[in-house]
Image (cartoon, rainbow, N blue to C red; front, side, top):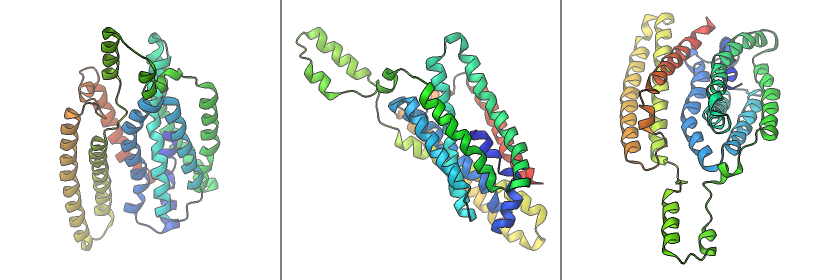
Length: 313
């Protein structure tokens, strides 16, 4: 559903440009706004699900997503549409929560199967969005693409609420009562030491705000670079030679965002290395068994992001 929403509007870009009378560069933000919020909120949502419970956070995200989809069908200008697309991008943060639920609930020998099914939905949703989205745009208009997601999102919301049952201890294991320790009158020294040990091992409810901000800045700048490069390349092929000053200005913007992205990423790494409860565990990310897969996913994601915008041709 989330990947379908990402690609469904791509066949409608020419119609959006015509209806709202905007440039191609502005229309590229239809995809960028979605990806920016999705990339930024994904690690944050994963952390929140560990603190407050996976099912609870998943349902909240789906409610926000469903509301964004519903309102998107009434977009009347490009800025309103981009705002709605940004809200829909929050839906991408459902993926790490879903993987976490599978890891906690599935038998060990079936975890890979469950995660493989969800992973395959990335490609399936994108393909369905491009094909069915084009059909809906042609016969019913691009506003109708949002309407098609509403019954799906509501149905999935109800199914998860009714039929996905998680251990209550999982969502409450971070909620420690201050009254519990005072109610128990521990007199022995061994019990006191054990209580201290348990307290020291309790996970921190705090969110790595500094890490989240620096990561958001790095990801946002990086996606803006891709958007500006793609838009600048398109302008060079379509605009008159007299518009070279505009291309030069775009090059300066790309250079500024490149520098800002590098600085933000370095700051993020330094923060995560010093943080006791980091937003992203760098040791896990750099694990030899995980790093190659992450790099492959990065390459595939970059390819999709840069190719999707050219689908309008």
